[in-house]
Amino acid sequence: MAFRALVPLQPISYADRGLVCAPRSNPELGPGDLDGLPLPIERLEHLPGWPRWPARLAGRWYVRTAEHAAPPASLPSIVLADGDAFGAIDHRTTALALDASDRLPRGRAVDVGCGAGLLSLAWAIDGRGPVTAIDIDPAAIDQTSRSAEANRLDGKVTTIRAEIGRLDPSLLDGAVLLANLPPPGHAALLTHEVHPRAIALGGIGRDDARRLVAAWSGRGLRPVSAARSGRFEAWVLIS
Image (spheres, rainbow, N blue to C red):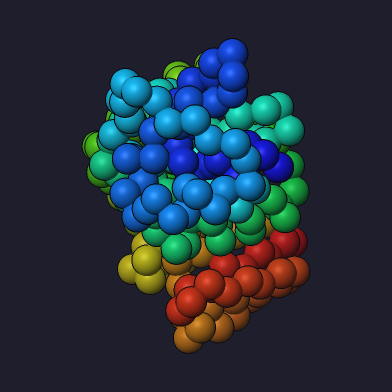
């Protein structure tokens, strides 16, 4: 619990007296917020550096850079390599999609439109099965590949640069699909006449959710959970 409280302060290293933090990488924190923290604080004479972007809690995961201090073993962690691919952490759908994927059955997975790769990384780190991360953006493929290396996921995450509508249907058929996508991406995925084992639908609003749930229900999947954050929804369907 103490580490979770320190996450907004950006822990970057361990010292004899505790954690060294660099809250400058989270500039919305002001002196009042620091003074209200229920832990003793010692201000350093020499300011430490700070990572390029802040660490965050996303669902049950602590998403950090390699420059942040590793959390206790009780807090699952994803190291995200430097990059600018979509969905790194700050988008509202990321935490929704991570929580939704926790409800899926174990097995071979395909992360369709992987972006920064958080869904693929979480799947592999949890040991839930091999995962193929797919995106048309070369920056997304590069960041996902480097993040897999940073998390020591050798051979557990495969990356493919491809358009969703031109994927080999055999890759999707019978797999668990992780689909945190804008509506056009979901439409492209549905052009494939495939029957996945399960699917997590994310990045959608209420009207899109109704349409997509109906479409995948017609292929033998049944909805088992739904969640909402703001105008976005995430659904889990299982065969």
